[in-house]
Image (cartoon, rainbow, N blue to C red):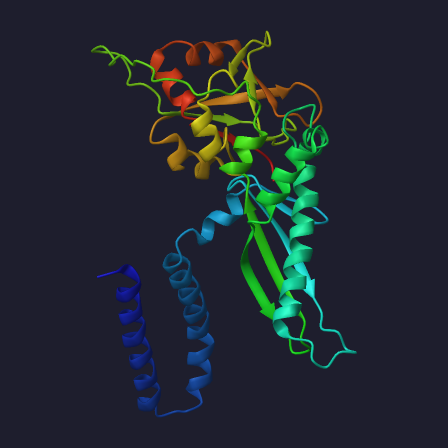
Length: 312
């Protein structure tokens, strides 16, 4: 039996007993006191039931969302969202809801394209710069954006239609945008830990709060001598395209429990960034040496098993 079913059953029993007690109450003036004492319990119990009944409901607060005038970029889910609004033509009484919906979708897609063009590829370039190099590239980007899908739509009483549309930055978009320096990497032979040694780490978490990290399509982690310990040369293109080069969160506990880094992540502290609001993170030489110490670590880096914890 599911937890929500158990809770629902308990809830029904409690409600039944509650009203039975009311019926047995000789002094009806006590009803107000009972309501006053029990309603807060009713309210908070209901809130708790809803939260456990909706998987992922609580995770949204820990996701990194960059809010812009045209919409938003959710860097934890690697998606762009934008809202479009279509209004009926008051001069045309034959204006159809379908036509208004089409207009709303077109406006949302245009906003998504505007956002996408300003997405950072790395510390020095944005998607718009890359698109301007070739009409073919721009055409491919526009084609991918047209695949955006509706995640919410609302019909107002005056005939207005509001839609929120979403497009993924993974898959085809990443394949097109990610630098060619990110190549497919073959399998890495790992060695089982010898007796007495700690088991290998299963992922990497960088605590990059309060150092001004700015997410981008690519990510670099370097030591204090600016030697790269994670970046284009370390990841498999297939993994980066399908899952993103790294995951982002705004809560350490959320990152530690994320499936991306499995059950035993190595946690390191980001010391600073190279440049202002940059996706290049500096960690200590000591932490960098841990990452370089064994083939097991190269294996999880290849699979992009990296989480960055940042400020919202």
